[in-house]
Image (cartoon, rainbow, N blue to C red; front, side, top):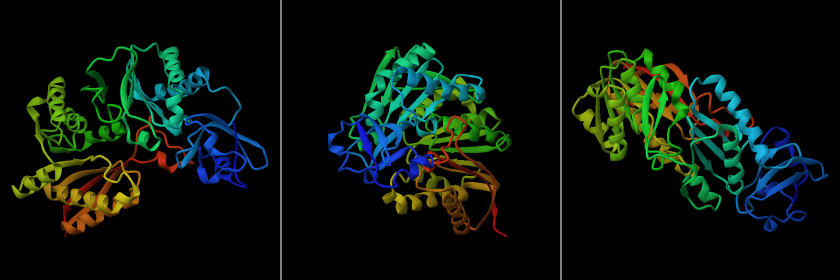
Length: 394
């Protein structure tokens, strides 16, 4: 089906963006109600110039997501070529097959996430278009990699916005209950079907490697530890003591297993509980640490969460600063799209004033090489990590 835009509404597409909003479409010439969710469409300017191919969802604010600006069939060969291009980038950076293989818009495949765990692939189709195309996506993966298993882990909140049901299903081969991955010379076991997101947070890989220079012989806190990535890698780099904190009993059990796998269980302690409550208790007990890592889940998921989320980020950083020894290091992260780098920096400034600390920014980290940023789509840049030196204010 042909979709016509209103006059001059092709400017964002010509500037490189991959989204078309419903209010940019000439619904008189191309009624959205005639479209099936996920249907592939041809996009034209008001002057009938071909612009792109994409898939549509008449029920979403982002009505069309662009797949290509060249007329072609959207079939298994299309996905083989796109995924092969994404693979070419990753294999040039990573010696071992553990990475995000496809990162949505940044790999010209909006709505599609694929994580690779050696010969197991975890696929997330977050839009009606990618859900409709999932069979050809799976076919392309089999063609390219001959995997032992492909898991469709379609349980993200974005699917609800697209009017899709959530589910987790084995699409191909076999998926064991737990899989083993390698990162920064450490190994971790992941309960892949019940895990958070697509299993592992590859986006922080490079940031975690930065820990090596800060943690040797130090006492470290890994807050919101999940499977223990930050804390266990800190132990690997030479931390003398590591405290991992998480609200999930399942996560804490996996941290203990992962500590044993990496032969550092004697240096890793775990606390299950609400992070705010645990931090308050540690402050009350006057406990001190040399490095505190804050890597919370997104505390600002929607614009309406900004006020309360900002308060939560501020309180977390205040408590963390109170737990640090003199000249301690705070690693403060945010994966909230609606919190900018400058806003997180301002939270650190405010927390410093509140706790009467002097803070210096030593390093700034971003998402890893397997999460490239699309220059026309700022939403693809979401991860921030400040490495800060904290000392008493003079």
